[in-house]
Image (cartoon, rainbow, N blue to C red):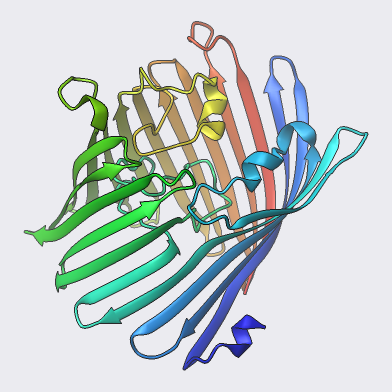
Length: 373
């Protein structure tokens, strides 16, 4: 109703709906859990005039499965200043299964553009990251590489102003508040020199850490190189050496036969801040640009290949050096017909016998049918 009634020179609606059963197996105990997810995405946009634009994005999820797999509180919790997540169904049965329904607004913003200025206010995604897996510059809304069923990524409640100096140079100021009314504010400047993109950031994250960082992206004979660095220092301890460094370095190359190879390395000094939840901390721990992993040294590699014009496959892996654990991922995506896709995904986590985490193995498998409109 709102979509139809708002006066606008143009309106658009898009989205998707998918169904995805999954199976979780924890070894060596052999415990198995299941889940069925129905996920609907709706995107609305209104162009009121040549300068003013409004965007609303929402995700509706209906989840059923083993109680172990469904955490109603974590799904309901909204990290933003505005509370825009609602559990409209929460049922537990006697057969150790649960049924949960949730709606979340992750985009709700007004955009004003005129001349060299772009101003945005509301829930939005502020993406300052340059690398593929780990982004030390994403101080407003960090995401997890393993959350493959949420390509839009979460947003934050913020005001953002951008001034475009030239086609390749811009400056941004962003201010955001979270549900605890803690403010994150930062300045970013981007420019290009000799076909290399540079950026610098400076600010304060959640009123706790001063953040300074830099990044660059370049191309050497088809080899794309990216690096990103941030330094976090506690506001209350400016004179000591308790700062944390996060730096990622990545490269990717596409061969003429469509084979794409990617690799990335992360160093993140998390010795004093790791969640202590083991491998599941990669899923359950609250990520931030300050704490991007559960150990200091992390290595990533991925190969993807267009098997046919309608089918793509990828194989990825990570090695968590300090805790002697690894991740392996496999995905096959098939475009059945226009706007209808079928995917099979597997994620496997394992620690080795002499790992600090002991011996643990976790296998997750997913099958997804997705219709886009």
